[in-house]
Amino acid sequence: MTTRSGKLALSFAALAAIAVLAAPPSARADLEIWLSNTSLPGTEVANAASGSFPGAQYSNANYSGFQINTLSVTSNSTGTPSGSELVSATLDIKNISGATATLYISVGDTGFLSPTAPPSLTVNSHVGGSVVSVGGNNAPNLLTFQSFVNSDDSQNGRTGFSTAAQQPGVTSGSFSSDAFGTITTLGSPYSMTETYVLTLGAGGELNFAANTTLSPVPEPSTMAIAGLGALGMIGYGLRRRKALGA
Figure (spheres, rainbow, N blue to C red):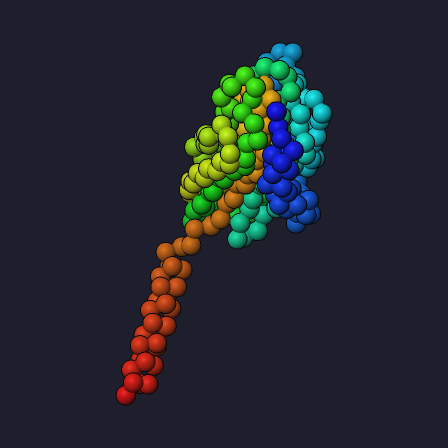
């Protein structure tokens, strides 16, 4: 059973992420949240409880045995030359079904125009959060998180570049995981997607916050110029020290 103090800790741990999500993005193309009790988008099973929910926020007292408190997504689509990002978070997801169950979540946005490659882009995929309870039946909690960048601009797509699947330990306490990658070919428009496959034992409860960011890798010439500038400053400092010591 979740204690009152544990519940408060869970809510405050995600409060900062939700506050960021509440801020209006610079632009928004086609934010969407997808939920299912059987699969991720594109592999739906007949008669499954699944569907898409256009918009930036979703809550449900009982979605297929899961209590979802403020699942949110935002982005800075259309992006900027310095970077693009997709951010998702929830205050609380709890398994209230009475048995071990799995929830499939996909969030995404389309219409990113910048940055693109070449020369290349660094992708950072991050997920973190905390677990309040491990479930009354002691079944292991499991989380698989993955980020995608889709050159076909597909909504909640999984057709393009992807970081490695991340599986942080979500048995108890806090968790965090980062994955990195490099994209050498990417035009616009493109979309970004984050997927979660979350298995919780009965009573299992956690929160999470995640972000997928793309940033340009400096060209070698730019790095060389920056390096020469640094050497020049070091040389100036040495000459100044020598003059003062004379």
